[in-house]
Image (cartoon, rainbow, N blue to C red; front, top):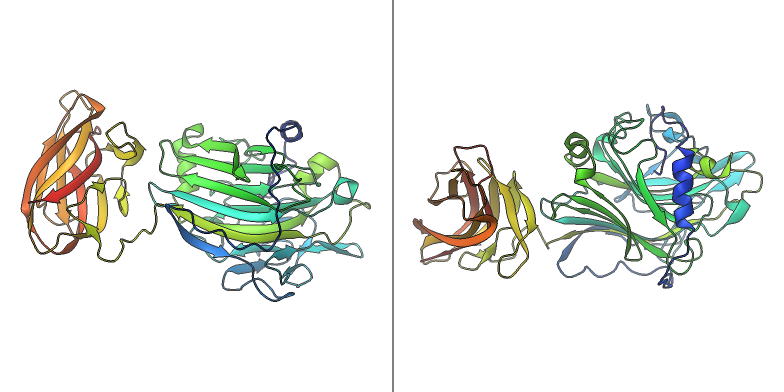
Amino acid sequence: MGTSLLSPARGRPRLRALLAVVGAALLPLAAMTVTGGPAGAAVPPTPSGWSLVWSDDFDGSAGSLPSSANWIIDTGHAYPGGPANWGTGEIQNYTASPSNVSLDGAGNLRITPIKSGSEWTSARIETRRADFKPAAGRVLRIEGRIQMPNVTGNATLGYWPAFWALGSPYRGNYWNWPGIGEFDIMENVNGINAVWGVVHCGVNPGGPCGETTGLGANRACPGASCQSAMHTYRFEWDRSVTPNQLRWYVDGQQFHSVSENQMDAGSWSDMTSHAGYFILLNVAMGGAFPNALGGSTPTADTVSGRPMLVDYVAVWQSGGSTTPPPGGVDARSTIQAENYQAQSGTRLEATTDTGGGQNVSYIGNGDWLRYDGVNFGSGAATQFKARVASGAGGGVSGLVQVRLDSLAAAPIGDFAVGDTGGWQSWRTVPANISGVTGTHTVYITFASGQPADFVNLNWFTFGN
């Protein structure tokens, strides 16, 4: 959560870097559009070309807790066995009391910090699911529509609302941050009209993400301030481009990105190769980030009882369902190579071939692609054709093979391919295959006697 989180060794964030980011947030912005709108709106319809992975619209009776099927409510000042004060120096006691966390009966979740005597209480919830991660070649979108606590000035010193995600290996360990990764989708402190987007990775202090600050950027909310209206905060993890990319948006306007090639391969892998992420919503009070920008917080001027409102949280993935539609994929159609259900060793890139789109690239010995539910029908298909390109040069070549139902099955056909004159110099190559009927899982496998990548694949099809 934010620019300083989850390690007992994490001190105050680097003030100069943070102040530079704040300065950027307060610059005037052009083309502002009021996008707040009423609270209590439904989860938006799934965009064309995407599939809904998970969502919560926070519908329910006023005063009820968020769904226990979807959310875990964290309590106290730390995870059991984890760093004190959640590793950030925040001072509140998290509770499961409806006064701190409950539905409002109008389609929103309220997380409300409350001061009672000298003690602050608030709430922090996290999704039960910890597997939010895009499939290879796809984009994962995590989105929430949120109004930050509606208070500004001295009255808001110490408020620290956040919408974020942590790598699943953190559960039960609590000492492996920041290597397992953290994506801060929306953070704010002290009522500043700005949203921060940050990624934390690598080691602390320092490392490729410059911990404890992380790789971050911010900007003012478009139109109405972050505190006075609902805004939509979105994070995208894009595995469809090379290098992979992380992107942050507010009301559809991108304000930050981090690419895979901005850090060493090991740090990126540690952050992205595990099972996925869980999502968190909370309002902290005090701690390193608000203190860095407002002195010791909260203060005697800080008001109690101003909630963060959450209209919905939703997760989508590009490319539709990962399972084929009823009836499967027609083997005699043009099957785009990037529409696999699983793969090993490959990447995607934009293609200049006719029709545009993407091709599968960086293909070498031992790599493979899997396509489920390919329907050959009752008339046997006896030919395989594929659109390939190669810039391997130097005598490097290999085989493009077709296997059915198992990677261990013998190929039913193959063809050899070498340098075609460039990685976007495309040609269609045919091969005979053993006659196939019925519906099968098709594996396209690649074999070469050289370690170098030897082919790109754009599409393939089967025929007679």
